Length: 380
Image (cartoon, rainbow, N blue to C red; front, top):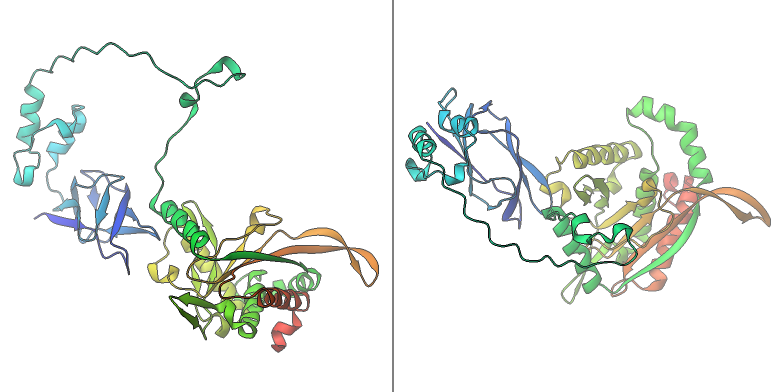
């Protein structure tokens, strides 16, 4: 008995997906709950699993096809079911699209393949006279080769399209401005170096710098609530919870999973959650819920070597903190020049809701908390 494989519910406000790739070929045996195909939405990549054991009898929606919720992706036959028709197509080097199917719903039968293979091949049509090609030439290049021959055109993934839309939306809708500061990482680095081995042994997770910045940001958000708010029409929505988005680079693009109720978590819990979400993001396993919401975002371009940048707000949030590379620089400390590990910080914010004074104060609070991490432990 054939079982239809359909597009599952994709999540809130998501009604369409793109078939990223089939993980099985027609004729392959499939175990129950085994992944069959990957679907890509504008937020996540998800796998569709086999509802039962069997044989993949037909692929209806090929790689790259756009499909809606409930659309037919393929057909799963009974375990050990004959798929000779498809095998014959492959063995004989035929094009299935050229074979007229007489089976149910136009499906190709073994007889259809045999009949098609028995037909004499149609003589190829005479090729029309080639029109002279027109190229755009660039003077001074090696051999003056046409540039078109050196280009590669690749369709944007749904995730990349959505990233582009959201970033442009942020620029078009928000009165975006960025303020900068720099932070001396000496004390937080010393604290981390002193306790990182014991911390990892005790909590089974590495102590990074992100948990310090999450903690510092939450303290600053509590003092400057506008940075944790958003605009909804003509209303300002102030949020008394702290769901912190942590930007993660993946092979598919940048995603921002959410550490929910981060103010209620300890350093180890924050580090563990960030590590878990980062791995799921790189593996394409993030759920819609893990990407939805968020009141404030932290992006660390320093992991890629960025010294300074102007991060773009993640709508409908009103601000984003940009961390950067820690680099030794000469600074004046108590009237003397010293070499210190310094990091530039950037806060991009929506000037419609956050005043310049609030933005600067917010960034100064983060600087103070990082330069004296004891403040984070004492909540002062």
